[in-house]
Image (cartoon, rainbow, N blue to C red; front, side):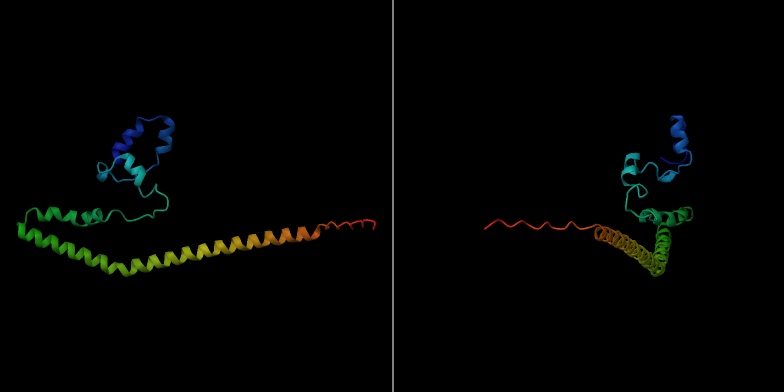
Length: 157
């Protein structure tokens, strides 16, 4: 659901649900609302699936958002000119993606380093806490008096 249809749907719900959903932004934008059912959005939407990163969207839709504005220009062109214009737009888009690739990879590497550093710090903190806990238990065990073994009585010979 998106935009106006979400607002209409929310208006027909119970007051408690209206309060909960008042500040909610639909997962799929309004122009895409007929492409996926709500069940599909809930099952596969990137915001509700654990472990999935926040991506930039589906690649085909990103490309369509780049080439879409050229529709107003190309509708008055001859088929050959239209094809040449769209091909040029596609080439420029691909060039932009490739030129941005080193920076994107660098950002991905830096984020991975930060995640790794954070994970190592968590492991170190856990090891320190466990070591401290273990040393406290050892000290408590040493502080308790040890029961002395009773000498065994010898049987008369």
